[in-house]
Length: 391
Ligand SMILES: *Cc1c(COP(=O)(O)O)cnc(C)c1O
Image 1 (spheres, protein in one colour):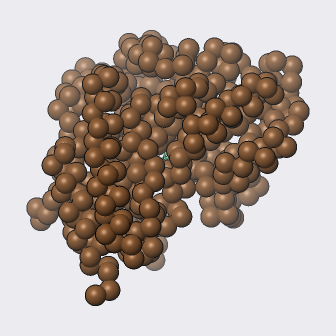
Image 2 (tube, rainbow, N blue to C red):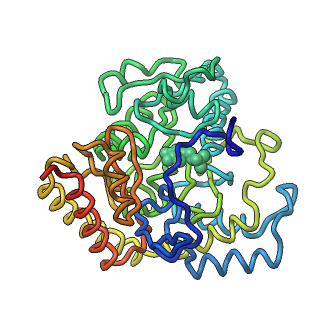
């Protein structure tokens, strides 16, 4: 018999009733150190007082009106994002997937309105993840995500990750945009070198096509800059954001420059819940904390500390781990043991990590994790690794 919950996830035998900062607590009181943060969603940990305050205050005032009316919290968050980024304009969604949908629509509409309706194709890369909608799976293109769900949305061309040669050949008169994650999350914490991102920007400019960045997982402070592309000193034309921006409340956004957004006039797109007062009140509170230069500096300091300790862990357990990769507090441990075994060994030591492709486990802790919690995380990873090492 089919379970009451559609069985699309094979779930770990864990169930939490409460969260406090970097900790998740089970009904029996067991406390797990959370290096997953809901897959980079709980950017400020669990039950952060400023976010609880923003949400509960707003909940007592007004939950929902409609985008038929002005929403002051949405206006405030949009203005803040415009001020803090390359973007001139913002559309709010409830998820990363919905942000992907709009990014694709926006790029195509731009060329349509420019009198180049043949430019519909979007180039993407192997290992990408852009969500589970029809456009999202077509964009990623992997067998795992697309098989059985055809016919797929046409207009995507898939290249090998970071294959610059193939890219120069792939761009034609029908290309509209290049879409990629500066640091792949689901694909196994694969960071594109800054020089490649610069090269992609140049290539887009040269061919008059748009650069779309998916910063759903790597954005909002995760890599130690507010947005990951800032490390390369470039700006995209369109950017997808979600996960961390809501700190656990469902919130996403598409940020764009004026040119790329120029086709999206009244009536061309919409959302019932996107940009609702609750989500945007929380989003403002998240940005107030994460966008502060001193907070970003702390992320970088802690990332250095964690990474250095992880390098030590890898050298001490070469049968279990192969290498550390990633950027900021978006780190991956490429495993020699099966990554699912390493994640399970973590659970046995009350530590949460998240598996990814390429036999990697992801460490995506709350951005406000403390030094002491980093030390505890390493101790638990040591014990987990020791439990997997044949003696
Ligand atoms: C999680 C994720 C998405 C999809 O976001 P949802 O909120 O699950 O719809 C898209 N792109 C990337 C890079 C992601 O990590």
